[in-house]
Image (cartoon, rainbow, N blue to C red):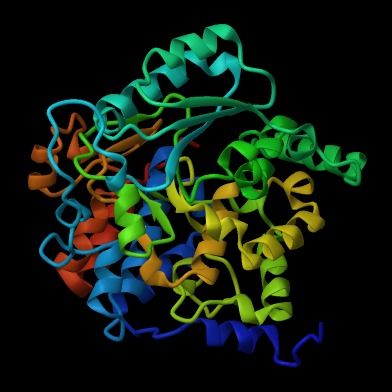
Length: 432
């Protein structure tokens, strides 16, 4: 294939479409760039993460509130309560006295959990929450995947909670273990350096196996081949609200590709060369970059650098055909060949997020704001009282990790001052 003569910089600049000069967004990005290493030590661990997560939410608002964006694009992700069409109001399956609705009102979808036998207690809690809050009324099948055969105890304890179909699959060894072509000496040195830098899972090979598997292999499992849509559910998560309508049908009806509840900020020391690999891919295969993409969510400078924002992928509702497609397949193969899953600690969250931002249109990415969700230590709780009441939510809205996002459109450019005040309130001086 002929490599285009267009520079990576100019090509990525073309990818960033319909940018606005809104002051609030610019300041949000400036806050990210100005957080020096010395400043980070003045932030509490949780406060720092929360502040940076809110900046990621601001970058979403900056992108989707652009005057040139359609109201549908804006409302599909983030916005004030009187501007966005809720997915709760778009799907109206018939009421039934008991049991799941008829199959005509179901999408070709499944719930997916990657778990170990040792995760049994957390898996039971997650399945119970999902069944009680959503799936008992819809009857979607479950697929459980494990690198080792599931124990009879796991199957029994999980199985009694599910009224519908459940399948238990084994992950192929060639999809899970560190490839033989990885230089183990180099990988081992990288793990040791991360231990010295006190990076979570820095020394874990199994964690890296999991990230690589979720990035490029889970959707290839034979048990998932019959499905178009999936909802990722991890052990020991909580669903705090009744999920009144079917997110799968919403995704299908509105041609969505990727759905999320929480945005997060990646540890830069885990992905030092990821963005350079992305830029290299984009220069080589510009035809895969979608028009109307969400580039501005992941970069504030036309693709020169990655701002570390990503969708927290422990919750994702997505189109399996997107991962199976030509663009993402080529993208994953390109990244995998770099060895960054093992020489660094590339996670599936930034990999999925960058791919969704570049290869899907921004109006195909959806913020499920009405779904109350918790993955310790962070929670998303619906901000609108109507959604919170209708969903019989058990979460505290004041603790919601995504709560700040709802101030963005309500306050306009004044969000700059709110943000700076909010960051200041999360900082605490470290004793010298």
